[in-house]
Image (cartoon, rainbow, N blue to C red; front, side):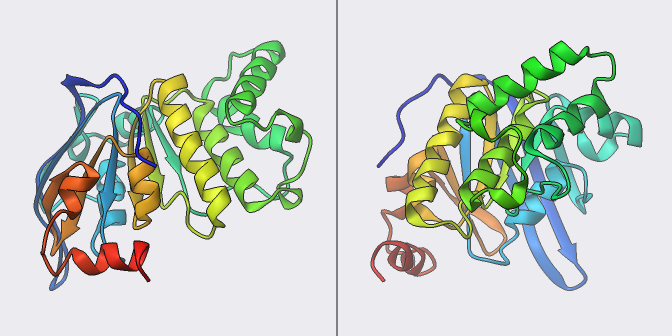
Length: 257
C-alpha cells in the first residue's frame, strides 16, 4: 500500500541538515550529510542498523553536536543554541520512542497530563481535560483514559505514546522505529495513525525505520543512508529501482525472505 498525496509546502524548510559529519573516535557515522524536511512532509530515513539513523535524530534534537556542518530546525541553528533556547525549541518537536516511554505508575490520563502541566502551567482543569480528550480521540483510544499502561497492548501503548507527544501540539514529529516489535496488523494500524497525525495535526515528520512496509505506507519522500551518506533519495520506487548491491539485500529481506 503506497501513501496518498498530501499538501506539502516545498518553499518552507522546517529541518535542514546541512553538510553534517559526525564521528565517534575512528568510527565515521555520518559523512557530509545534507537533507531537508519540508513543511507538511513525511520523510522516511532508511538504513541498516548502525548506519547512523538514530545519530541523525540526536543531532536534530540537540542531544549531539555535529563535528562539521549545521543543523537548522524551525529557523534555529540547533548547535548554536544555549540550554534555554534548546528547551524552547524541543517543545516544538515531538519524539515518539520505540518503547513508548510511558510512566508505568501513572494512568493514561496522568501520562498525558504530565507534559501539559509541566510546560503550560496556566491551564485550567477544564482546558487540561479538553486537551487530553482531544489527543486521545485523535489516536482512537478515548476508552483507555483511566487505564494503566500495563493494561494496554503494545500497539495501544505506542498510540498513547504518540498522543502524549501530540498534546503539546508540536510542529515536527520524530518517529524512531515506530513499528518495532509489533505484529503485522498492528504495524498497519500505526502506519495509518502516522498518516492521520500528519493530516489532522499538520505535522512535518521524520520517520526512522528499516521496515519497508512502513516506509512505503507513510513516506512522501525517502532517503537511504549508505556508508554514512544519503546516496539515494526519492520515492519508494526510485530508491529501490537499482542494481546497487548495498540496496538490493535490504529490499529482498523485507519483501522476499
